[in-house]
Length: 509
Image (cartoon, rainbow, N blue to C red):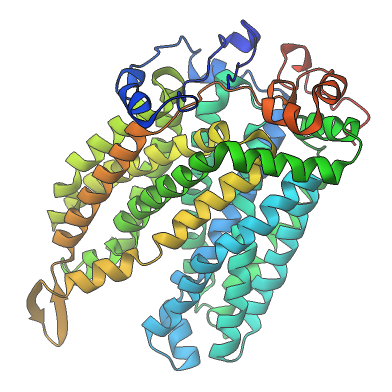
């Protein structure tokens, strides 16, 4: 199967051939191509400002609504982790009991990814996105009104389903219609919505928690408000052009539902290996983020006796590094390739593990910045890498489900590190038991980096793959060549002739 990218000269991006190399080869033949295929293509890409100028108004609005939704998704997730002590006191439970609310969210996110992913690929990006955000409003409000521990767990479990449904939709909304030359940097910027959401949660937690007689509840009530504006924003935008083109092909096939089911059969038959690979890759990436972040504040406080304010400052600086890293490495992946960029930044991140976990003074703020620059730098490549590797008819489902299943596998990261840390006790400080968590984080993350580097090196890459239905051989097989020719005869969404950003076409309402 050959995936041809956009035609030569479109938005300054030359055509790219399928770089995956996994179809039609034996395992040995495929593996023999992996190291040579890592050679950076060194494509000429405009400077970042000119690259961003390639997006028209509609494409910028798609990115903005996706970024805001993903950021607030992260905000809502972190509201619990930032109020663990207050929740434990409210419900007369231990901190460990409250963290089950976090674990349930991580466990059930894959359910939401499957449900909303299939809905988004079948019915379009708009209404599953709207329903998703309506659930955020209801469940954040409900969390703020819970009166018992059981109610709290039940509401957070439902929130996990809602949270899992957003990532794939947001990635598709931001990137499907994006000009090819700008995909890398837009991918990096989108992914850092997660770090931005954490920063926002930290700020509002300081402003709203325990500042009124309602204690922790105002943070959750406030968290339910911005999704109202995000819903209104999305309803003012049209459907993605890439989806509309695909829907026209399904209509030409005679029965949209039957064609969609047939697309699923074709995708499963031809791409089951890549689906398994993406879940394994996302497990490694989620171990990388959770392993470097979740227990780190505990390490600073317990092992190195940082104050609460010092921990907060270190975390904020680390997240600023994450935001810079995602954008920078995402942009570089357009020049050097997706896999090469991930591998290089992972090697650098591994080299920084010792200062990141063994410096016990406030000077650790510098290694924290650069370590998260590397961790989230690698993550910045992921949204577009997943979309380019996913079957065209199931981008939302595959991107969201692989990401969330990887999250499920890695959900025990902090528990693993905390349990191992207890095997390396330090002299107690008063009645407080102390452990050498830094050693565990360093060893754990070194193993994760090695895993990610190996899996990325042997994996496929389809940088520059066309997003158009007209170039999708799976869709041609499912709907028929005639239906593909009739349905995909319209203008492509990222052509330069749409640079004025107007919302054209009868479907763009």
